[in-house]
Length: 64
Image (cartoon, rainbow, N blue to C red; front, side, top):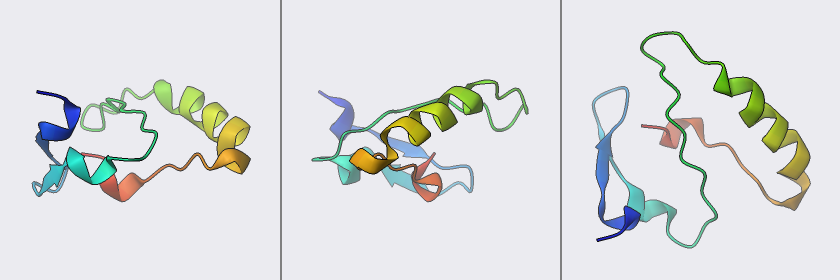
């Protein structure tokens, strides 16, 4: 079993199949959206700014 075999629930309750990320470089982050404690957003923003020109993307609709 690997990460691409997993399905998770998105915030809206829909299933998200991690196999849809296959072939992409992916960073999986628990954003703790429900509790509002999200200090990791700052570090994610820094990664985005640093690597955007190399193809790094943030896909908020894909975040479970």
